[in-house]
Length: 78
Image (cartoon, rainbow, N blue to C red; front, side, top):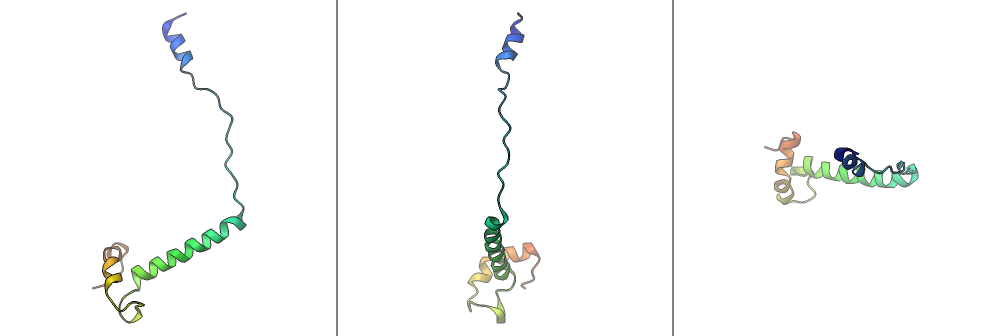
């Protein structure tokens, strides 16, 4: 037998059974989707609205913390 034929036979990948993806019921996913959506809305509020008369916090700390994110997302702030 040729040396390259035996070398390729020893490095042949082993066949493994097919792995099926796990199914996730919607009723288990829905609370997490709602929670993620609420966090997303809260983040959009702080990046886009938290300044001036509509501010929850009267200081400029939140504004300065998300300042670059405002410009990146296209919110005017100057």
